Length: 363
Image 1 (cartoon, helix red, strand yellow):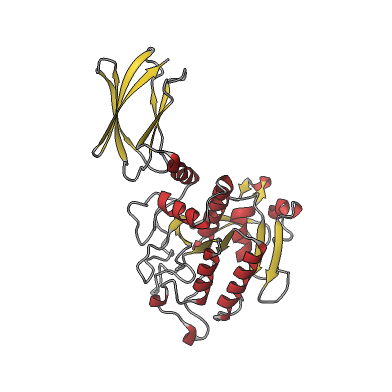
Image 2 (tube, helix red, strand yellow; image 1 turned 45 degrees about the vertical axis):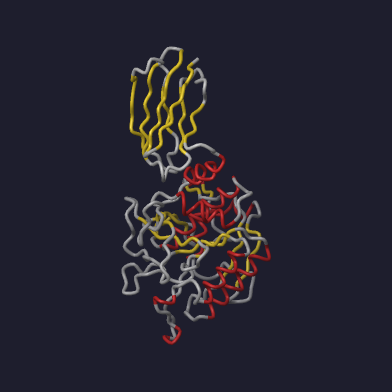
């Protein structure tokens, strides 16, 4: 349906499907199988005003590659994926998002065991790691085995330098089906999570439908990474991975269900921009301008997750005091001085064993 339905008109009209190939059928026609890929793509590429649906990265260019034979499941598909990743690298692709996972096959002798989810066993995982080392950001679905006896992630979600994405519900709790970690060698998996329960999608008939699975959480993170990398093009793929993991909302307490938590653009932006901050606290502007807003940022909101902010007059008399939570997502606090008269004020910032005393001028 991607070559026909209205939801992808802009993608086609603007020529942003830059390359296609079907490694199963050896053809450039990738539009003839399951609409699973259609639904995945719709979360990133759709720009559909009539239905008020916009994907996470509607202005990106896309390469569409088929490596999965829908009617059967054999390990050869892992090698086809490796061929696809190699082709993507030759084209200059920046991000690969893949919504599939392997653990059992039509031939039981090919089946994996949980101990094989160690980042170095499955051919598709090895290929994903090579692609990552070439500078491509690898994003995979974590797997939908959370409610089965298997439970854990599926290949290639065990890739060492890649982002495996689990699924949450709209109440931010883990989707029951979402595979859990850690990887067999003890790494945090999934890396992050996004909404995969009841996600809105476009199907092959061009209808707006809902669906559930980590297949639909992974492309949302891929779209986020695309926009973030466009904003900060000098970052390497490894730096992107580190930023996504380190700025997500459970970074200081990762777990086997949600990994490092939920990523966000604001958190990624704040994390990267903190690299240029030299002091534990940045307080600006000083003098405070006419709007009366004094902004306070911390360099590391994981280390300084709560800061006591005290505002005093020039004699040291307390005007107001607040205990302010900080995180990568909300790494700025605005101390309003709008109603205060012009003059000199004192601001104390205390977090853990750190205490910074500042003199502030209000115009």
